[in-house]
View: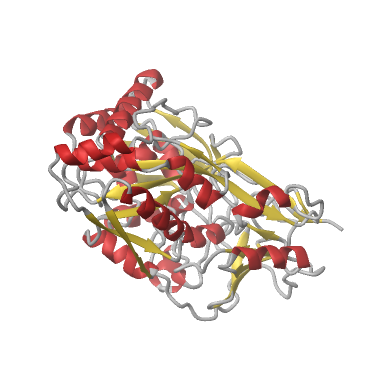
Length: 504
């Protein structure tokens, strides 16, 4: 899931929603109310999990929808709507046995046909997650409790593909075909959408019939608070119970505040620069490499994250078992200058796309402009709204951009769609046949050691070619009121209120 492809789509004003499921007449928290108020950094673009790629949407939808399997606290796949599964000897047929007694939030029965409908919708409509089903030959439901997925080749990352994030959630056919899903989604998850005030908040109420057990929190209200300092002041004042919108410069101070519970942990997210290889002179690897040598990653991470990040020259962090050691670049302006000279490039001017939707891009853009000026390169950060940013990226109307990805679990998530020739998110138009071969091999290799080597080799080539110029892995930073008990921050950034409760 892309962060700003967290890929966060165009923000669309959404009207007030009517009540749609369990939980009625519940206070919404804050200053002693009976529910939780959570401050998030922006408004969802819509609530259809198959069509949105907005991080803000998924912060809400994590609590509304279920997937067939889901990551546990250690990011290993565990049962969710499927209580068990098995594979054939050739690993081309996966059979999932569904939980019995699961219902939709309106009380109607959930069945295997809903899983088939959801997955085929993604595939047939060629929605953003369709690439996760590459190699799937057929999906069937022999009976109401069984789903069979047949593959044309082994797919060792199938569980991660279908359970890694709520973009693969199981949706309700009637809810989709009525068009209500974008504003009034119907899921099987622990909370259901009760109301939506555009520009203000979304209110969820507990689904008392959830298969995982009745939530102990009767309601969760997600308020849209784009300014981090405002979110923190609201938290301290008791107007908000939880927020992920924490100013990184306040983390050290907040860690000493006994009135605030704070968690900062290494994530699987990564931030990067992407030169547009469809434009000259960025089609020359030496030019891209010059940029990689000229930037000071430590300074960028410190300026944008105030130390709450780990500099990395590849995508996968050291805390991830798929981590690969790589130190191909140093901060070396002399070498950067030589590379530009070898490429015959002088007086290079760079149009860098930035957006206030992600203030990190604006801050980093200014710093990168100063750093590249030292090698005679002029960077002009061009600030646009998020909808324009997405459009410009998709049409290749930029020289350089900075962005982040989150929600990655399997190594395929980090590299395939971004760097495979013709990949779904390969907007920079990178192409390397050796990398393609390694990424293709990694998708079907069932020997874990060999698979790890496939991705390690591919990752090093991607970095050598500077398809992406990797910057750092940011920390997941969240803060909440001590009265919110049982809440746990996760390295994948998933926000789950299902097991939390409010204390005194």
